[in-house]
Amino acid sequence: MTTFIDSHTHIYSEEFDSDRGGAIERALCQGVTQLILPDTGNKSRARILDTCDEYPGVCFPLLGIHPTEVGEDYRDELHSLEAALDGRQIYGIGECGLDLYWDTTFYKEQITVFERQIAIAECLHLPLVIHSRNAMKEVIGILEKHPRVKGIIHCFSGDVEDAKKCIDMGYLLGIGGIVTFKNSHLPGVLQEIGSSALVLETDAPYLAPVPHRGKRNESSYIPLIAGKVAEILDEDIKNIAEITTQNAMGVFSLVPLQG
Image (tube, rainbow, N blue to C red):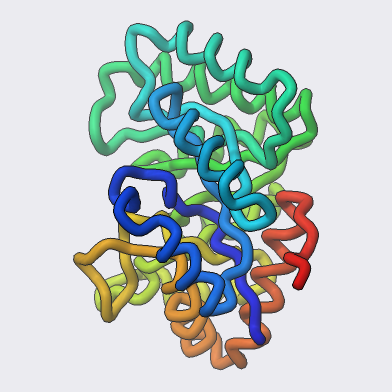
């Protein structure tokens, strides 16, 4: 069977409380064998770790602080993150970064928290999973100052120039359901950069691909995203699966699912 990795899914969220096991089973049946669970902050952390404990070898935790969770209590969030890192195997730092879409009140604090997480990733030799909504140029400017840290630009939304800069810095580009949307600019970007630096993601329960757009997203839809990328690049879906799976395994230091 062709196998895939969902490099970014919030399967631990309340939207899956009624059928989390079923959603994971559907993913496995579609060849999506490993799921990476990004953290958003102290409020989500216990759910992530509990889910990974319940589905070992399938679900893998990240720890981090989402930029929209940064507020007046950002120091407390950082203390909680640093405490959670002690004694727990994790596979990356994130999702972290900058968000200039929802609220810019705490933009300076977002930068402080982002840079602290970059420092943690560098110290622990872990990859970053980066959120950059309406802030691609700003994120790139910060990452250029930290050349020893690598990772994934989650839900990549930049242009060809942005893509090439990120790839040149050693980052992979997370491609999800948006690539299937009718008015998406991503097909043009992919045609310029190819498949060598891509990983697949759902961002479930958000951003479901066509034909499920507007409904709850889930990891079993990864083959739909892979199929669209293959169509755009005129490549075999098995090739897209192999490249993106190897990329995800490499960045997160995963081993193949046994059995």
